[in-house]
Image 1 (cartoon, rainbow, N blue to C red):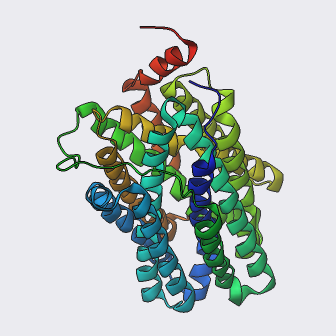
Image 2: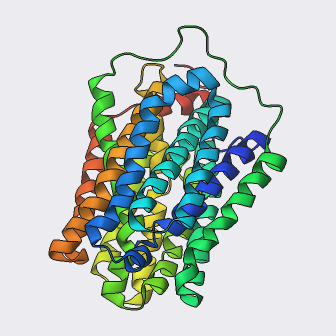
Image 3: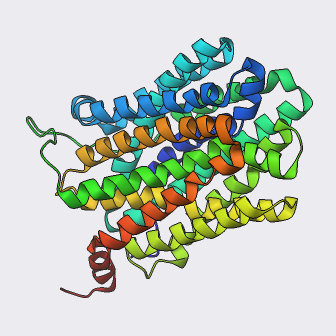
Length: 394
């Protein structure tokens, strides 16, 4: 796999778009304890916010190929960012429980639209350097997650009733991206008449699709509920537990920037198996720990392990799609939607019944499923990319 990424102006445009949505996810996901306290909801009710994000991702995935064909991937990504901002503003201005579900659905649809089309655009733009380029774009995006977590955690600690207001800063940042970071020279992919991608996928694709669900479910189970587990095991307030999730975000950022460079000699499947293994080690440390510093280390390793899973698992599905990347990404959004919809909700239900510690046993099960799918459904395509990069003919 090539060691150098494509980092031109278009790369930074896409990366900063995803920084904006990760500022929201970094603030919103770990703040579930705060939101639950504000609204007086149960774990299951709070988990429905994740379900709203998931249903939005399913809807965005179902329409992705059709809308990309109609508007083009670039324009669709900006439309998605606009819808995200609309949902974000509604979430801040209308904080009651039923209305926050609706606003999170709107924001979630925009988030999934941006992610879906950013991935396919960078995959097309970077060519054989796509895996590392997408990973490093996601690394830049992780800075947004860190900022969002730090911002909301700090505000919640100082002004407990005002933590949502920090999310308003995302709006001028989005305007800055559009006005000053946009690559006006980029030529969008043009779809020909009748070129909308459709058709049956292979059995290997669908098994990998299940593995993708497991990857995303373990990620959102962590980002939504790890702060609650930390609070129970180590102590502290919901605000301080939210801030602790910085370790997870930093692990994500460093992993997305450096893991691809460290593992560049390995093909796609080997890289994915490696980071899933790191995630499992981090989870074991975090779940068994009752010590502040050790728990922080576990969260950091979980972040490193999860850092490149979305990009690598998505590229696996593109590789197994028989040349239908937009359809594959639409189906990956469906998979992500199912994972996001069910994982936080199921953990919330299990938390209500058994407590968060026992509920979290669900996560290693998901990690095991993801590992076995990659192990038994290889792609081999990235080994070809290694050969091309090294000038070896097959």
